[in-house]
Length: 262
Ligand SMILES: N[C@@H](CCC[C@H](N)C(=O)O)C(=O)O
Image (cartoon, rainbow, N blue to C red; front, top):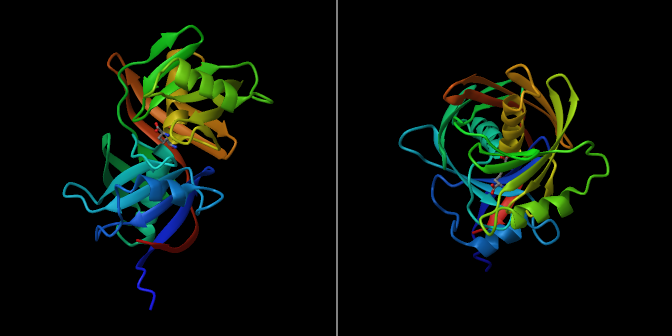
């Protein structure tokens, strides 16, 4: 008799940034098994995803989010993953149209309206400038580099060069941004831990919006971002202390579900 134990997984995507989500409130998933998480995220041998997310119980909020990159390692905050886990918690009946959850960078509040999940991001105090580029931490580290055009731009080659060359082993996510018009920008991102271009990165587009405002290239506090996977909106307040009330909004969509061995 086959006594392999299985638990359900759920696949979600937020503007094409895709994740495997598991309800781990009963702590059944082997959360330190880096090789297994990497295998599940593998697009050829596993389910395929940019990241893996566990939903767990939390004393302070509705639930806890534990985020892993596709390489199987736990990492810093994921904005699109944060929006997807809110839609997942709604599907599980844990939250209705409002949520508060704990993540590696602290508590996040979120709302769901017409399938759009709006997520409060952590405050950002500092934007560092380096020539035509900016560096800031929006829950994850982000390099924001202006380019003339993103068409035919080699994001993987240029992204890997900066990720390893400028930021060493710890690295950074690398965003390339081109102005579209007014407060609208086009963004493509090389993600650390995926070591590839992803179709969108939530903490990345948040970093781009704040950097463009800091650079006075955006004049209002509501910024629209086009990514290869869809559109996101970032709004915020800004004063002498930095950026606060930062909200990242966009769709978060259930794709399919199945069973994995544990
Ligand atoms: N896709 C994410 C960012 C995930 C974390 C990142 N790869 C890192 O390790 O810094 C997002 O939507 O924010």
